Length: 186
Image 1 (tube, rainbow, N blue to C red):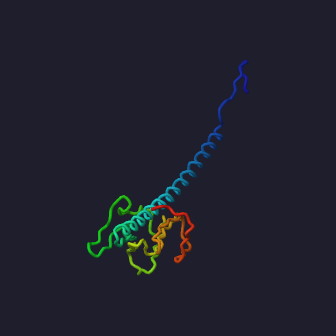
Image 2: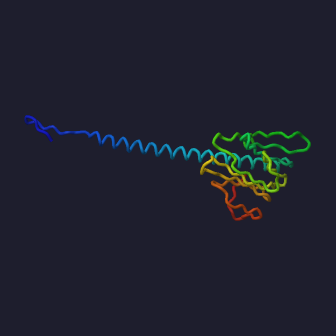
Image 3: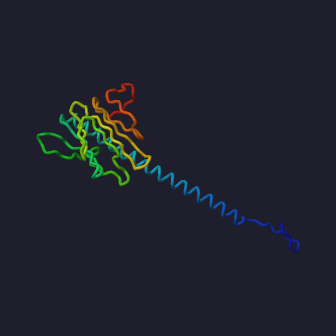
């Protein structure tokens, strides 16, 4: 408090150092939030793409069972897309398009990191066959953004069951089915 001619002046306000400290704390929290938001956005893209792939595989299985003809889920890593096509010998192979079976272009940052097909030759384009009896070719498809964000889609041979898991798949038991595991309707 300073007194001049009987008046009392109280110094209010903040010093320059206090203002700069507050500004630095706010800037640090904005930078930390932006980095966290970008990482979560990338993770969300990977999960969404894996869910689209899961829906496409389930649609291919349903189409094969309903039509009584094999149907294929085609994965094209070079063109960065996947789609469903018929595999009938009577008609030319047609790409199917519907609510769950439209061709999907992978987002720019997402790639098919690894595709493993049981009893299949190594080619540039992968085709997973779904048969009219509900079975399918065993497959493991791993999607990634090139970093830590990964999702894996597995297709079981006997049941044709399609499952999406977050993260990398470390083991695959081809000859086992867990009948007690909770399953969702197609």
